[in-house]
View (tube, rainbow over the protein chains, first blue to last red):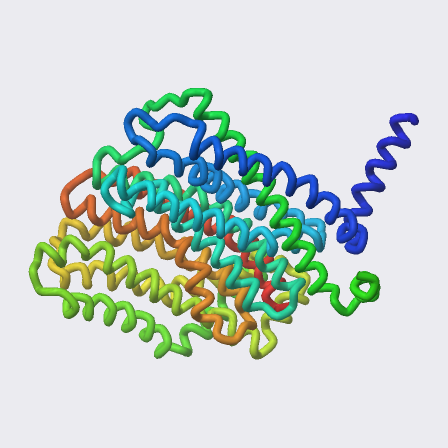
Length: 254
Length: 223
């Protein structure tokens, strides 16, 4: 096969993704490829984090919650960034799938943000002696949660799904420009009136047998995000196209 | 393009001039928030001075938010907005003119009222320049950022509450820097750096804002 025809066939494959029935069928297969690594990696992280890894010499067993906390905090930022990326695609190329992606990713990302906040609070009580501090990272994570909830609220308020998708696309782009500004303003605010802030990475060094489960957790949570979002997209797609013939046919045939 | 800008600018100015009552409402709302606050705590000067920057800035945030609620409504109801869209002129320029007049007609009064209310909360006169400076730089940012969400929720019933949900998280930087500068000025710390950042945010909002508002208007009119 020459490179020309290969490029052409690749491009054709990409263009076929614009076809919603094709995406619906093929995404069921992709979901398995995301679900299996997600389950395996997260299971390994949980077992390793709870049993295999020795307790920390300073924090004892409390630190084990980090294996859930850190991946969800990473994913909370990653998910918002992908939503903004999809927002550009949705507004520039008017790709329906990009709109659906934003709508489906927002609740998943919000859940990761909420999980990061809750696990952080549970970790903070024995370690810092309080569930909540107005630390820079905590505060910007909380505001990120509000940004997610804003996207979800906007989507719920607009009846027409296409307009709702495009409105959410614009809002996530505006939000992603603001995320770094908000973060640095919060950093400036906390350094202004309380001297040194508590830092999670205070010169600490991580042993490799503690690090591997964390990396596996990050990979597992990423696959979980992809899996749940893909599944959300399929549901969203069925709902949007519920009056079209291809959806009818697939539902009748099971 | 310049012709369109001035035409919209003059039109908006004339409309604002004929609704002088509405101009005062926002100011009254701001004054009320700040004036009622001490009633909820005590008249201890140290308490009031400590919270004064936060109270003033929250008052500004809320009154700008409320004024934005109806900023496109009249134009939408009488069809002017549709004409703007069909006019073939850049919508961003129209949005820029409209938002500048909106700022002049509503938020500019807050810039004047802020320092006066600051005196009521017992803050010394030394913090005046900081208050005026941050209000002058912060309110345009608030207006331009908030207008994006106002345009998106243009045709929705009960848009007011939703507008708050969408916009208030985006107002965090202005709140932090605005109140932070005033707080620094009260205790006599240098605050020039934060003022520069506020100026940068203001420039960013005025230059990028109109394009986002234009895009949001196109989406919002479909909703």
